[in-house]
Image (cartoon, rainbow, N blue to C red; front, top):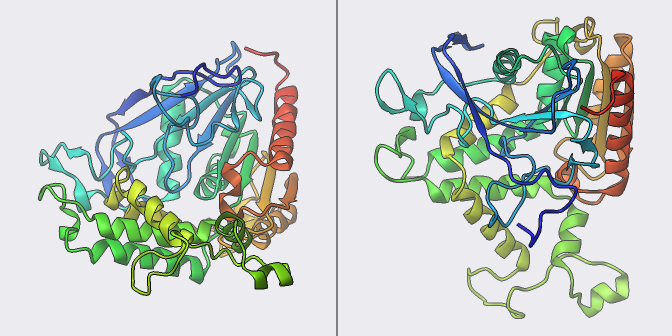
Length: 400
């Protein structure tokens, strides 16, 4: 944490645990008889209970979206650039709710939790959960928190898919849906990347068919590789060139090219050690991720991505899925995002318009690729802030 808490930070936050004893029937047909969800809240709920905003996290996210847990924390929550007093998601105006989804590994019930029926780790016995299941559990959380509905549901990437599911499944509970850098369903290429990541985990000799915690081991190398593959897809080519091409060759100078080929130690090893800065960066990202994330959770999250298809109950027609969605929509995409490129957001926009829904769309020129939705890019922050100011004004209520 900085020497002093910034004035636009939510400051020190304490996670809360919500327990649910009513069984939850999942899309697979399996039943979770009891579970817990870990939640953080920022700001205050107004007297009319009309200013609540739900944050839906992406694959590796969790409930800790803003602020700090301890005074010696080095990093703030994963979306701290957007959530706080005076920020785009303004906690002076909104009561912001952020949770760790079912199957997660940051405190909510998941594969690393103890199965009450066996008193052992769930491990691979934890059922596959879908975006629909997450939203069902989020609805129960909303009810338990005594919130009648959301002024807005906001999310990027896999979080954006949850936003769409809210608008489809519970249209009377959402007034605004903010879907950022998402897609209506995964392409074959995206499913392929996810399968490579899963295979790298399950083929690790320390995976033990998902029962690694019982064996007091961990598929570290497999999870590292999975993250390295994933991380490549989150960055654009231009972002990589800029990040790993701070020194350029004479040829690159002469041709105004930058290939991002900086060497780690200034010379080639002529072996199979790490030579390039980009290699070192990927190893670092994989190492750090493997120390903080659960491998079974990674498998679950990627399957939730693969299975997401809101048209399955609507004859393959997304516009029919949106027919009863009364909320207003904001969709945003980023020009260099090749994981969920702008044309995927435009597909959603086209079907929303076909369904007669009110939608705003913005494609933002940004070099950062898919990860752009996590970064404080001025045009992006300005647009998100402006839209949520409109949400507040429509709310007809002053600050809580």
